[in-house]
Amino acid sequence: MKWMQFFTPVSSITWEEANRLMAADSPSPAVLLDVRQPQEYAAGHMPGARLIPIGELDGRLSELQPEQPVIVY
Image 1: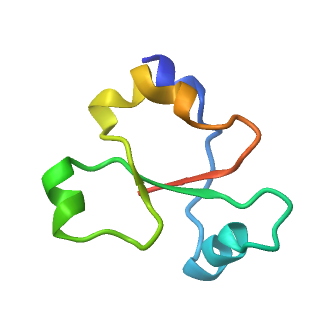
Image 2: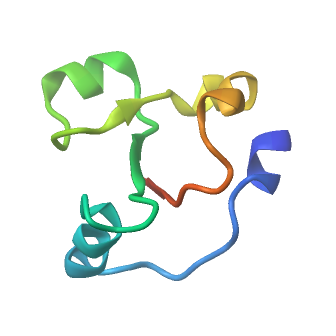
Image 3: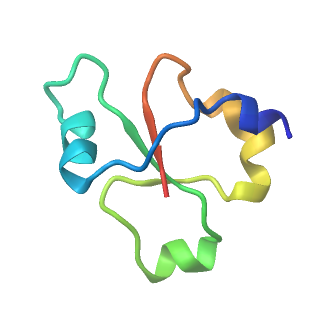
């Protein structure tokens, strides 16, 4: 799958590390990306998260900025 090439393999990060990456004063704040289904997103999601279901990710990569960190859940 082409979308798998977009992500650099990383270890899990802590909530504190995620908050630091998403901080407004960060040079390039991270995008919080929810890859679940729309009904799961509607039932509850993290504030500020963008929804791109995993099945649509390959066709919607252009919506993400390559230079901006992405936190996927």
